[in-house]
Amino acid sequence: MIALPLGSEEIGYQNFYEALSEIRELFHSTGRFDDSNAKLDEIAKLLATYLAFKNGQIPAFPDKTDDVEELSSRLQACFKSVAGLPSYTHEGGGSVFGANPSLHLRATDGPIIRAIVDLVRYSIDTAFQNRGMDRPFDVINEAFGHFVRDNFRGNIEDAQYMTPPEVVEFMVEMALDDLLRKDLDSSAPLVVVDPSCGVGSFLAAFHHQYSNKRVKRPVHLFGQDKVERMVRLSKINLELFGNRRGIVTIGNSLFRGSPLDALNGKVDLILTNPPFGARFEPSDVAQCKDNLSIFLNPRLSTRCVDSELLFIDRDLTLLRDGGKLLIVLPDSVVSASGQASIVRQHIRGHATLKAIVELPPVTFAQAGTRTRTVVLYIEKTPPRKNAKAVFFAKSDTLGFEVKARKGVQIKVSNGRNDLPAIKDAYAKHVKSRDNETSVISVHPSAASVPYAEVLNGSWTPNHYHADRISALAQLRASSKLTPTPLGDLVEFVADTRRPKKHSAKTIFIGVLHILTEGVLDMRGIRTYA
Image (tube, rainbow, N blue to C red; front, side):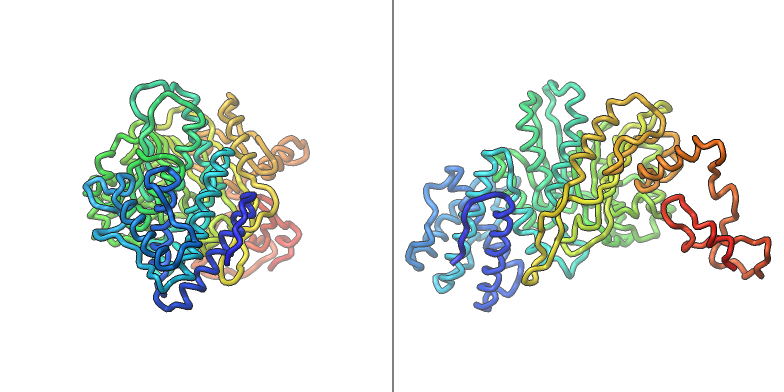
């Protein structure tokens, strides 16, 4: 039997993982649920059922103390009622749980049924308790992230890396702060979209924060995902946060013909974390048709394209003029050459870069990857000569570590979360009228950099690290030293250059001579031959 006392969020997470581990073992022991998808689906169905009971949409939900035969039949009846609710119906009709929705649990699965009923009751009760204290507990995102990760481990294109709530909250707050600086009393709805919504974390968090602001302007939430399972989980997540009007559809947001096409050029805000690293063949890119502007260029049409680059292109098509995009991306998008540099060049000419925030490697460790990522924030307005300085920041920690326990990657609280301090630094950046390079925060690093400097320069947050900016300022202030870019002193050569015999007048600078950002080992350089 699982002990699930209500308590703090940290205790709640611990109990979730312990409960899920026990249920996983129970599924494994029966041999009937060897597929991770089947396990996830059964738990999601019961989550939706108990949530409907809590919201008063169905009259009852069975208790684990019921007789096993009765428990099974009552659960079946409750779920069938819930599967037909408008909240879980596709726009075109039909349930998101399939043509003939039913539970696959049977009376012979007594221990599993009781364990799941225990978990489901605890999950939703905890979520409601935290929501009442203004501490929303993203049950789907946190508790079932590793189930989803396991489901798609073998299919990189469908990899649904759950965005940590620390990052979700930060991005939503950043966007809302900018939106609230303008007039939101308009009668026209604010259109907020996540084209690869996963479990709907961005939509749910935006609904929660926007509702708390008590803004008069109505908001329309739209999400889309090509995996039907994600659509179900998104709808449950929105229900959990009290939103029954958000629209979540199934479809590939990149390809022409999905429901999201109706919003092209009409979206005010996109908050998203698209799939990384999937390679799209030229024939696939051609199916996107009018949904792209960068990669339908004939000179690029013969190459494969990474999914994250295609989603940037797609998002710009969805945005109206003046619309905003906050997107999680691998850091190669802001630093690499090739197609990534083509995207950056397009943004320079067609949008305004507002901010880039580097996230620590631990960000997606719970999902099985330590890929370095950034939050890119752009606005679909052509850059002006007097454009606002760009905000660069680097987060070293999110306030947690990820450790393996019984084969499950678990978040463990540790240290501080840099993102709230970075958000405060961004607010100071926005209010400042200074258009010179300046350090806003040292720990964590945050700086304002003139748009002209960034326009054709580096987009890497580490290049504008507070330590580097401060060190350069001290060098410039010194009467004995004259800072000079390395490019003015040396010739950069490729590895393919023919060998040249060393002479006493030759100085060679290699990677090993670079100690930190902008600092060279001069003694080593002078003695290296």
